[in-house]
Image (tube, rainbow, N blue to C red; front, top):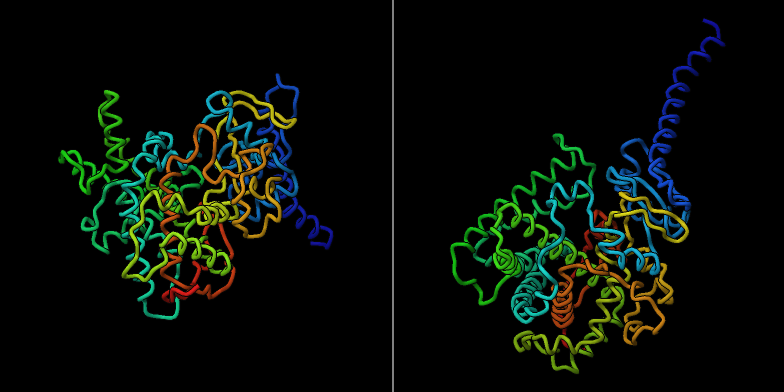
Length: 481
């Protein structure tokens, strides 16, 4: 065979598959764009639809923040893509987000990706109203303080040069969520049983946002197996509640309230729906607060001046005292800790645990000169909206004082949305606010610490967390500021 024949053969071997691949990608793009509403004169947002069927899901899952930052730089505050099996428009910026969130039930409705609905259940998060949390915050305080104090004592007594903060905080927040949200008592789970539940929950969370393919060893398959372990334990707890007339611990947990709400509406208790609702409550009350608490440790460890200001506020309120004289916290004194609250807000601004929220367009809507066709998914970005908000100056600086003054009257309330917004803001935000404030108080008056790897690299998967698990050395706080 001559040289020219070899070249021709090589071209056929490599060039033909490449051309077929490029043609397939182009046809896929045309197919996705054919979903444009012809009755609307506006164009679709800019953007790319990725690979056939997979879209850009793999790039987003693997690269997360890097992928999203690249998209923002290239396409601006609104762009189209294809994620988790659906054509999607991603939206950021206070005014764009305001338009989406104030259009709830009229322009858009909550709809999580298919993999999330399959694992967590088709019901929306959640039937428990935020107001029910507000009226019961006082019952949460002693339970949270007990768990946080015991955890910090273990950290201070831990052998070895360092502690991996993120897995430790996740276990703490899981115990708190199990007690307050689901009514589990400390005696109900052995350390091994608790660890099994923690591991099952983490496996479920890792695979929440995956392609909707339920085959052995796929992300969805692994997520469902982990969920079944959690459901079995929750069902055991629900049946115990049904057998009791009075709640343990002297207050009604969120699951008990949910059961009473269902029965009060004249509905029969559906075991599967209760298990799904309980799992959603754990998702909202455990993983996200663990992320925020870990970020708090990181920011306060990097900014000792801010930690000292927190301690000065505690000192003024008579809360900075020796461990054996520590004052019991209550809602009245917690609400007086304004600077501590600003530290939490600044942490949530720079490192919101959940990067965005999911909606579906109920009808073709117009936004910023583009159309979003009926049936397309809409993701509003929390982290990007914080990044681009005009409300904040020196956006990359950790500066809690920015929240000490009320925002300007003409500023958008959608510039700061760590818990989402509109009619469907995070159902657990009242619980999270109380928990994070107690955690900050107990941490500041009990511990000093050093981040052994310096500023952490954060990753999203799907909740924001430090890649190195934040190795930290804790020592007891001397009481001197």
